[in-house]
Image 1 (cartoon, rainbow, N blue to C red):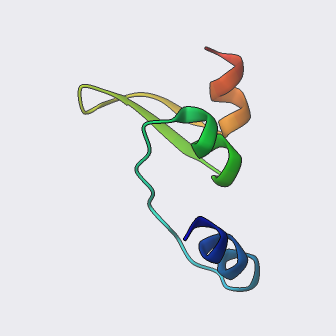
Image 2 (cartoon, rainbow, N blue to C red):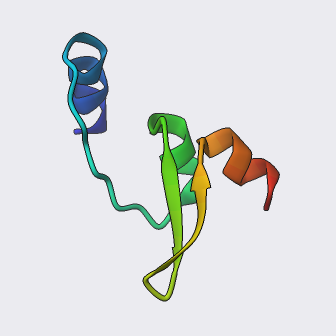
Length: 54
């Protein structure tokens, strides 16, 4: 399913909201990420920035 979304995103402008518990997988497929803790925003930015801040 993620491969289909990735191919579609390469050709069409649209937004996908993806909820993941694995930050590494999210970093692999997302342009922007929002990190939540107990449902509250903790950090937002590019996946690379979130992984560097771990």
